[in-house]
Length: 509
Image (cartoon, rainbow, N blue to C red; front, side):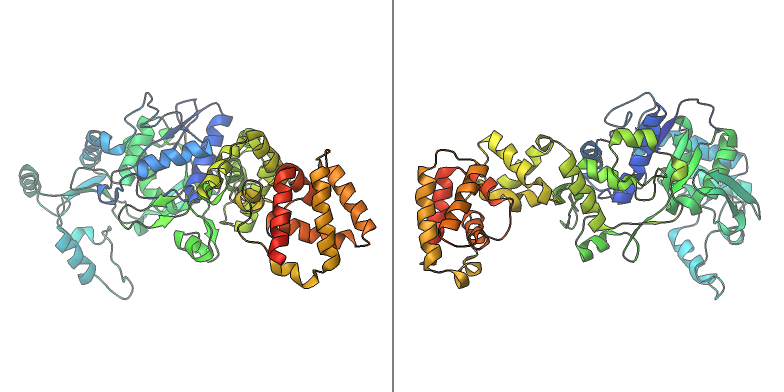
């Protein structure tokens, strides 16, 4: 275990594109663990692979964390005592560790050109080994400091010949560690290739950088996706060679999030029509837009709730958790080791529950923006809040508010006349003409009195109220939807209600 008593965890994304919900779940588990133990949550940008760097991706990651309310204690933006927090700004640090490994016999210089590496993949290809790797059998046949004379190596280094530093994987050793989720995990070193630790441009690869940075930043626990499990033996050996295994953080490899066919991908989202990124992401190279949960109409509270239980539960039947409850109840040991299947319908259910649970004023601003995008301007705030309260039961996404509530602020552009016409008759025409007069004379404009008066009139005209309610609803909202019809009339007010009824009667002529 780490010498530091304090819990320090980190999320270390590469700024290469949108933030997948698997990435946000990794952030969430790190964040919850840190807060539960009064520890620190660090965000470190792993931008050592400059060829994959995408402009705007780093800013996007910070925006996503801000939206979800999972902001780090230390980062390139927030600062901290363990900076810099971008690997590209730490470049000078890594070479000394790589050189130390060479000196101690745990790594070596490799001078092979890209052409020679390509040739190796062709020359050593067999049916048993269809894709040869630079490993303990092949290293002896390549141009590196293990096969060349010491004088030759010195000469090549003195001439600044392009080279990389590779780890020298030991033969047939068993490397074991205890994963907080999976228990004991073992690997045989013979099946792992000699990974590059320092690239020709002097940048470290992830393998070297992650170990050096976790050590220098005093990381106590490292939680990352299970796709990193195959790299674990390399990282464990680097810990052992550089800092000693006692210094290594405790590890947990989180299960994958599964889509309809295997690992959840951006393509699944496009194919099945659900978001896989936290927020909208536009690829600057292709201009392709990938929709995010935020823009789809999800509340951040619902988003982190659904992610928390995607692969974890607290041992009870509880499904709805606030962030405070999650901090209290989360435990990494209760994270499942198997993949968790993402279900979009269930995700919407979580959002619906949070829409009902929260004060409508907490998401009013977002709904207002959605309505304004549809050309509906809100001027009366009190009425707006009243409308949100009335329709929230019907909304699974914040975007549903536009459909469920727009007619309160703007008369419908289309009316479902065909739903009324077949059963329309002279008696109903007379009833509604009289209803208009009653409405105009009415001084008690509230839902209860309007409903009572409506039913008394229907009885006097000997028409069942049910036959008259649907036409009235369509007159007010344009279609067969919306909350209780007299609640609608109350909020619309006398003048607007009368205007809409008259307009619709005109359409039936």
